[in-house]
Length: 398
Length: 151
Image 1 (cartoon, each protein chain N blue to C red):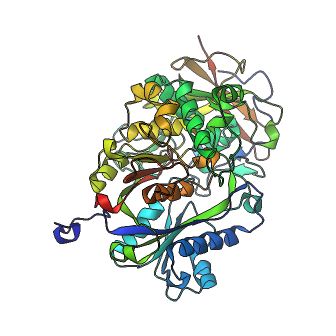
Image 2 (image 1 turned 120 degrees about the vertical axis):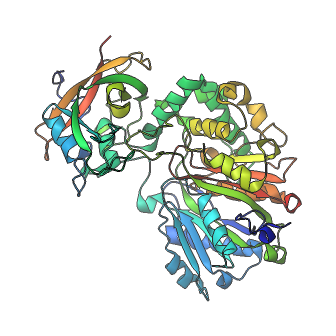
Image 3 (image 1 turned 90 degrees about the vertical axis):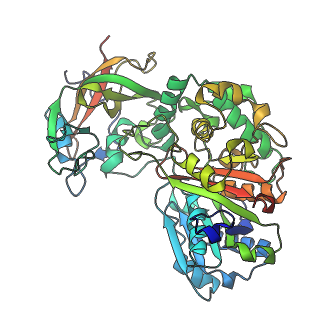
């Protein structure tokens, strides 16, 4: 019996990704285009990929307070009828899957028919995340942190990862393996900012500390660019050029008082997926063993360790054994991870490049294509609140 | 507890903490300037909470009271920062930040700097004592709470 017939509240199989698009990816500050122009380029690329007239878009969804305003985008593109405009609360990449879920929910609820989900970033135009200058006085959460030199993201997350390492005996080598996997995959990806710049354990170990326990290569890049996908109802999925990737499930949020500042979350040594991972698997009717490939947001490698454990791929105490390079690489490692190079080595597009890579894997178009490619997971924004996750599947999974 | 022997642990020029426009945390920041550590406690259900909020997260009473506690605790986590992410910190690294839990106040946690050798070995669970650091010449004036090991 179909979900529709039972009245089950779910996204499973109801919405398809039919277009993906991205701009060139640049080092931070190096984009020749403005942030808004990057957004337009990515959206048009996604429409072209789908074979869709951009004027048929009727909804926009984004996250992290994206500055490319939906009303302006609709006007610029000549959208005939604007329906949904949704912005996911929360910063960083915590919303990269939630923005997809919000768009899909709009479609399932009948609020929109063709929604673009996107992220655009031009740090030369608007400033970097990794530097905190020009602030005179500060209040709220950052007042308890910044005067102590806990300013930028590496400093904000290092203590959470240190605590996790302490509680579960996780070693530096587990984090190193995640960096190595991203760089390994980026060497086959001409789009990757770190294409042609391989990483090995010696280079990782010799790299400077940013904030212990993070070496340079444990930290994401900062980049300019934009990325977008097109969502339509399942019934229209066959009308476009490429093989559809169906949404199997999604979840967003965090556990009890996860957002308690400053650093007072009850489950401190956590990536915030304790409640989300079970919800995702439940909606998708998938178990961890059935996941073929994972894109897991790397703000910092330590967050990936936590996120993968919380999604049931291994127990925290098994992290040192599981997280070795051979297990994490395409085409046939135990759990191919971040197969485009991700935030560490492809592009820091706040995780939206991970969503696009998951679609490529389902289509069979990745430069690091995995052998089994019916179920692809994306995990957004470990250690932030709200976080989010997403499972995509081929038609065979429905 | 005493004032820190040197001027300040980190150089001047970092963002200055001030209460929010609605004044929620004003008692906390005012307390630090008087060498007093104030944390919210609910008089109805004895729940501690930090950072502050307008109501008790447990029983939803709005009568949460700022309560003075001893500035002592134990290291819950730590980081050694090497890469400056603010102009005021160029050439200052490394420095230590610690997350301290206060078992006598519902295990609330606070971030501060750990005084002493920035290259010292740090063990999670180590007892620490609070040290107030006053920035009297700052505009506006403010005070911070740092930590040092007692072992």
